[in-house]
Amino acid sequence: MTTPTGDKDAAKPSNFLRQIIERDLEQGIYSQRHWAGIPGDAATQQSGPLDPARIRTRFPPEPNGYLHVGHAKSICLNFGLANEYGGVCHMRFDDTNPEKEEMEYVEGIKDAVRWLGFSWDAHGTSHLYQASDYFDFMYRAAEYLVEAGLAYVDEQTPEQMRANRGDFSRPGTDSPFRSRSIDENRNRFREMRDGKLADGAAVLRAKIDMASPNINMRDPALYRIKHAEHHNTGNTWCIYPMYTFAHPIEDALENITHSLCTLEFEDQRPFYDWLLDRLAEGGLVNKPHPRQYEFARLNLTYVVTSKRKLKQLVDEKHVSGWDDPRLPTIVGLRRRGYTPESLQLFAERIGVTKADSWIDYSTLEIALRDDLDPKAARAMAVLDPVKLVIENWGELMGGDDQLDPCSAPVHPHDESRGRRSFMFGKELWIERTDYEETPPKGFFRLFPGNKVRLKYGHVIECVGADRDAQGTVVQVRARLVPDTKSGTPGADKVKVKGTITWVGVADGLKAEVRLYDRLFAVAQPDTGEKDFLEELNPDSLKVVTAYVEPSLGSSQGDEKFQFERHGYFVADRKDHDSTAGKVVFNRVTGLKDSWGK
Ligand code: ATP
Ligand code: MG
Image (cartoon, rainbow, N blue to C red; front, top):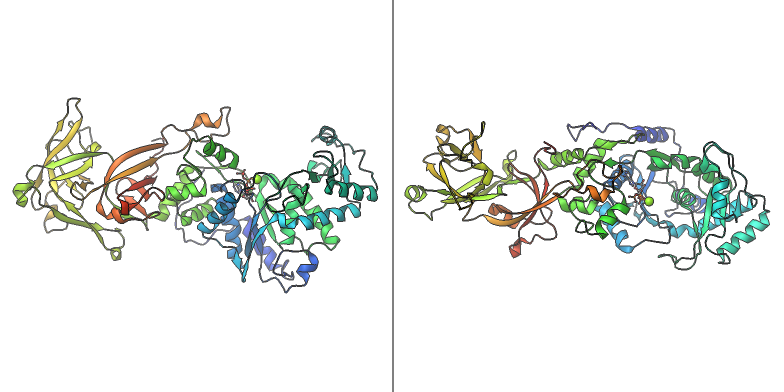
């Protein structure tokens, strides 16, 4: 779990996928392929000009939930590689399963990809596709296999089929239906299509090899019966293609060159090639056909990345919705304050490998800090406020209600961004933890008799504090040391060991600040004996009433700030309404990794 750091603009390191693509481009493997401008079979593609895209990749989500950080890795990879090599990445909804697909998710997925900074528009075409549009072709491909003696209708029960499949040590046993004639298979398959058979009564299977050491090659199922309405095709079909049959065909019809998927599909690759080789031989799909390459999926500590589990967290109200800032969904990360650039940087840094591993959550936070540090405007905020009263203010300033304007750079390394202003006065908000009656060793902030600088303001000397009946400090008292205002000549003649942040009582804004922490209390919540819900971090959200400097009053949603000493914060996109005086900030992340310390 090492965390690569360093210059984010450094040349992108090579990886096995870049090497494969560069080799294919060098050898011109795909350079003679034609593209009709739309997905289609071999004849359609041949009627078009040479494909203007040097490579084609695709991002093929199933629209059954919101996307998460694992999908972000896949999006950055597929769209990123296409951009890098003069290619095009297709946005494809894998909607071949008639159940569980919702328009809300389709729109959410498109928003997420666009927000991450990618587009499926290229060469004047929108490469936005849905797999269910290919059902006609898939059926034709299935009938082709039947006619070629390469597929048969199997009417064994699911139990028999499972038993006859064998296992790793035992070859499978041929189904009694395997030797049916082509005519019989054609008729029976058409009866399946025409709704003459009940769900589960038969499947169409490829006829490959029941003794193959790869169980996926033991006559995999191609079509199943499912009397269900489909959101796109309605009741046109009562048979639906299996994912393993549909996916290679979707890739082929779209002229995909490099079909990138996660490692669990490695054992499917022989069937992917078998199917497309057969369909290419039959002149059905364009040549050379796409190739599948597998990479390790992203496993991130302290979160779960499975749409099903995320949905459970949302449905059972453990979080406030799909965009809860603690969730690793893209809408959640966005509301938390993550930027598209930080997620792209994260994806680039974790790279692609052929071996599964866990990435520590802090790697994501480090990428975020590296992206925000040069961008985020600075501001002062007091998250656990207690009042500081300057006893000699009126004397020195000619009145208790006098205010002294102070300023600070918007960004310490970029003068051109100007300065922010705020008022120093008799009463200021400071952090409760900045005062100690009896200072522990190494404590340089406020305690009776000690001097500190109020950042961008004056030096003060602490006098003491007033407490209520319970002993809680209600206000801290101090005296101003004259001629020490920051930025004025001789201001640093009085040496102090501590500097603290503050917000003026006169012009500070009251704000709701949501201090988010990790959603789960353990690193790998989904892997042990316990139900993952038992491992939720009970302290993942703490809401405090804070005071923030007036420059934050005009901030718009999505704008990120560094609250000095505290970390990065973002105005909550949903709840913050500065024009209505409702100021709400989310903590994005601390200034440094403090988890477990
Ligand atoms: P989930 O299990 O969360 O539902 P999925 O793999 O079923 O995820 P799909 O919608 O089918 O989700 O995935 C779309 C694409 O995103 C696929 O190409 C898949 O390989 C990729 N993907 C999904 N999860 C991850 C992950 N954790 N890391 C990398 N890529 C992922
Ligand atoms: Mg899936």
